[in-house]
Image (cartoon, rainbow, N blue to C red; front, side):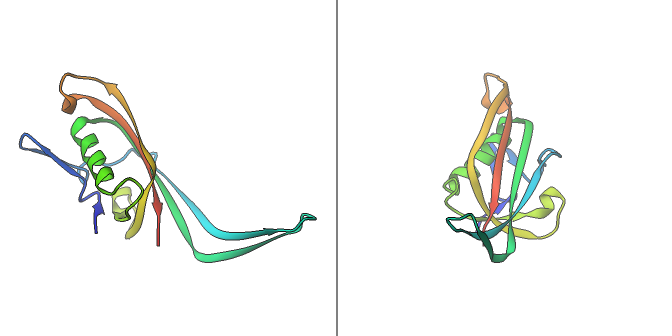
Length: 135
């Protein structure tokens, strides 16, 4: 099973770009959500039932001004997982928490170029993506 950030690497010209060495911005966010079933009658009566006692976390990571090597490492990791098709392990120590969880990508990579260069490895990018916890 793949592991982020350990398996997100890219090598070019003898230089290895590893996401272990590149931390996300401090403004990452974690959303907790509980899975509930909702029943609403025709007269407006509402009843909720909790399906699971475990919450699912959604983690949003932002990277600003990363160079092309780190961008390519994340893009390759995303493509190798088939986008949101395949789950992988996420090391929570990467964002200052403890443990590992099973996650998948939620949506697409949001990529924007901030400084362009003739060599894509010397260009700088802003990158944002969301990870959804799975069981």
